[in-house]
Length: 445
Image (cartoon, rainbow, N blue to C red; front, side, top):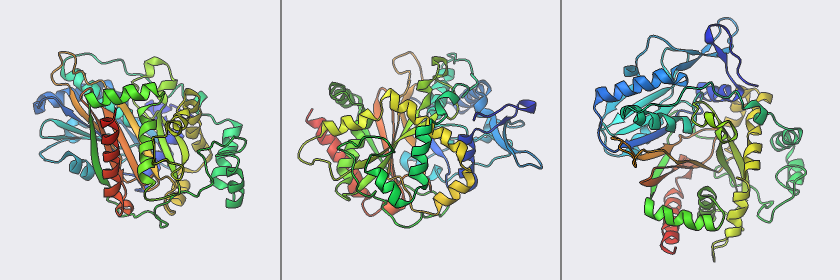
């Protein structure tokens, strides 16, 4: 079901927007962050003027969620009587990862004349964009940085488009998908275990890399709710020269960096458990739409979900067949199928579902989220251009224990490894092991 436009330009929330809105209200989620480092410091007034032009050009940056009097129905509407000065903060600091960790504690307020995003300018060079997930996804936040650089260089940006209009044909679940999800979520344990022997969903063949091993939950307790959204953070970087060599090898093996990186995680985490990992890989649904929607702001995200065995990871040699198995779930057909996950939200009460989910141990172990190579304008005459970009997610009470958030410029790849406090007993060994394995792999190319 798509949001419908009503009086005075109002639009009802789509189910995925309402789901993320309820996460905000219930304080199970704070904000995600996409940060960029400019190639040079920018004057405050110049930066504010560029942001003002960007906001004027992108309607999604001028919206907030409101409730209808009497019915409490939710709707989106453009806000008024506000200025970019209200949502841009200038400060100094020394450690970007620490600043990101602190920034995750911010929760946005709805039904007021302020947008659901905020920008922190650190040392006149780092731009930390904090976003509520109700109206924006990670790619939308990356577009913000890319288009702001265009405007700072007096370059035009594309026309603003109404978003999501083509999504419904992809997000409507098929009967088979609907049955599979209902079995997975609501069937008795004995019945889901029986179907699990046939594969992840009913009527599917089982791969050699699927097992009946139970999933690693890390903690048997419900998530820690201290309303500070604390996470452990460690930044891994890969320079351009190393990444080019690595990408060349991966191309020869017909796999993507995302699949490769997920396999590295399996290899390292298998030192701490022999149970299966429930993994999630967010998907950019813009790839399914018309090319003119390639830079539309909004929520165009779903996820591919996998249950992967750590017990079958080989420590004697690199198992490219396992990586190809992971890659097979990122095929165009699988990505299109993943869009149906968004449509499943039509069948649940978002608030009740989140309350139930947040009272139980997390079910997702690991999320690999890759914003890919961003348009940094380095190879143009642009000054400034994007020197670095970092993607980061908060401690999502109903989300994964561990996040690997990636984003790249032509200068380097940044991978921010996040984990919830419950992972503290193995986190340092995990991050150091992951970095060591990566460096060893690159050294041997």
